[in-house]
Length: 261
Image (tube, rainbow, N blue to C red):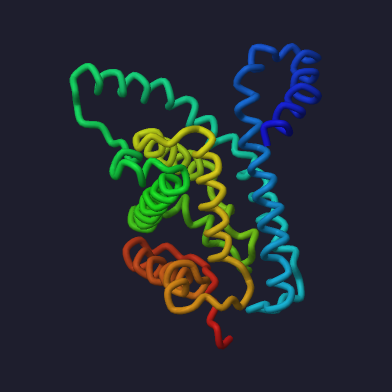
């Protein structure tokens, strides 16, 4: 991965920046390239893993797929990672300052790696812990989006799809994307996530969410049916949407797939 990152940086980015007088942004761009590479790989893995399932075992048959074009555009914009990586690096100096104050005044700090020395400090284990924490934070963030009227009006863009597919995960209002990026970056820095881990954590989380939206009949089983299936996701979505409609008289359109439909 680092070899590809260096190759793109030396042969593509640096000549481009030099040509247009943008060398002041040269240093930060190398780190941002990692996010872009992971984003492109995420789309490739998602497409080659889930698209055949949508073709072979679709939940819903479509005569016209033009509605998916906007979702594809949303996906490519989101997966370039510009918003997320910008917030992560903008917040890094602030959290470094906070970490210094914590050390000076001996305030207890959250260090998930040291919860169980010899176990939680292992890379795979710490990665899974971070993933669970961020997934839980994302769950509550989503609940808040459905609870507060103004916030819901931004989030309603996400629920405007008429067709669920592997591309449906990234449709959202730009301002809501910014708020979520700041929220996730702040929590990640607070619990000690490193930049490279942060990029991969977001990619894995996004892939899990795409499984929730995929237009395919998958054998989830009892547990995964409740954690990541389209059915459970859609039922929860419709329940929240109904509640918000009663509170704010906001009309939305949301797809709800049923295994027997």
